[in-house]
Image (tube, rainbow over all chains, first blue to last red; front, side):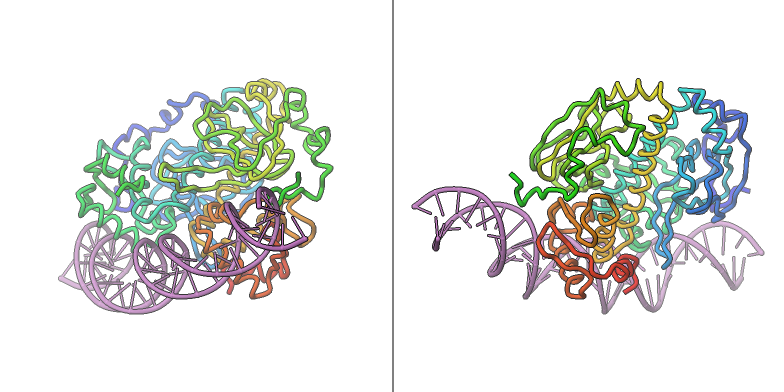
Length: 231
Length: 231
DNA sequence: CGCCCTATTGAGATTCATCAACTGCGGTGG
DNA sequence: CCACCGCAGTTGATGAATCTCAATAGGGCG
């Protein structure tokens, strides 16, 4: 059952449905109106332009949020990890496409319910606002990566970004639920360039790559230097 | 007084203070607690990391919102045009630096007032939320530009982006309150590459460049083709 | 055991950045 | 009033980073 395509997360307690809302009480009121769903590798959860009927919370697995152009060029805006809420913008339509990186369990609730509950519950409102702000801020950092960092700097920054998210691994062990092509599409690079940057970092002993879904950070300080452009 | 560095906007009625809030009644309650300020070319309105005490609305001129890295690399996240609200994220600190492109007039109000008023006034709340969503959506489009478009495509997209904003000019006449370096820093390019792309577009008769702050769009359809990667 | 998919490595082409020279306009001062 | 100065923008020549195309490797699943 645990495929290479979808490694299990270490903290498997998270997968228990009744624990999902534990940390952020502000969203607790949504629990009652939410239903659980399963998706498998590369399945679409919703498409850019679809009527935005539901909001989602990721329980287990990983999701990519991306834009796909007519000619096939793809830009991933965000990787969703367990505990993250997504698809909650208050527009009529989803502004991004959501696809499962592997086997995925999500909770979802009707957007109308959120709006109704938000009217009554200031803490929920504040939490929604805060989530939006965090996303905006993350997008701004992402802009700097794409606009002003070299390939190697982007890859180093990416590793640190994943490392700083809960559930991303044990200690220095990074768990990457996405493939190399996904990383490339997040960083605005080709898959080959991502590989070469990783190989470089490995040669310099900043990381170890036991297998394609695990990366071990061997020298955090040096990695941060690389990410900042200090050669 | 009206220098080449700061061209006056055609619709100068907008500069009348009492008209600023006309279009969006939802923000009207903020008018009472706002004060007017002036900044001149390249002056800093607030810095990334500063305590976010105020929110702003641009009355006249242009503002760039950017990130500046220790080594001097700069990424502009957004150009603020008259009527836009900025610096309103609900974090403790500004996530971006705001600088005047030329002579600028802004309204500003204490953030605490916004939060208080937002508690009482659902329409204001909704408008704030909507503004956040629009910004997030714009940032996502920006990500695609930086990650997956060529230099020429980015420049064409940029011109169309500016053209689709109110007050950006008369008819086909685009007004660019920013300099070439600002455009380059928005597009993740060098100033030379921006120039060459503009020259290309001019040679192909898609645009005309009467002076550095004005660009005339001669063939919108063709420009859109270029922006989408159709050669 | 072998196939398929993903990742890695290599060689050459291309785009964009870098460095440098020059232009044009506006403002200033002789 | 004209000449000079300075800044922003443009153009040219070269080089470096990244992409493209192609071949190889490795791991999991049938």
